[in-house]
Amino acid sequence: MPQSAKNEKPEPFEKNLARLDAIVHQLEDTELPLEAALVLYEEGMKLSESCQKQLDEAEGRVEVLTKKAGGKMTPEPIADEEAG
Image 1 (cartoon, helix red, strand yellow):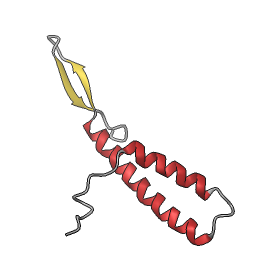
Image 2 (image 1 turned 30 degrees about the vertical axis):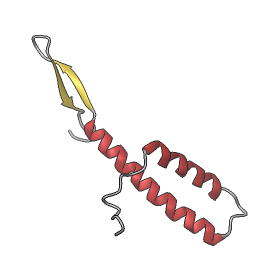
Image 3 (image 1 turned 90 degrees about the horizontal axis):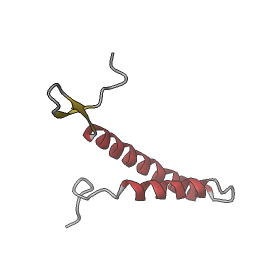
């Protein structure tokens, strides 16, 4: 029974980014046939979406330690620059 895409662990961010960079270089080749370019473009878009999702998840996990009165360090979410 094949696994669904949701159950598969995503490739590491760095690996996806390296593949995306390789695709960009391939697409810059003016001798690339149109059909091959379209296949690469589709793969690149999927990788781009995956990388963005991983970045969004990482951003949500990042916390800033704030020193409270009494010297205790407390983790707090990063302030949203767009809010306010």
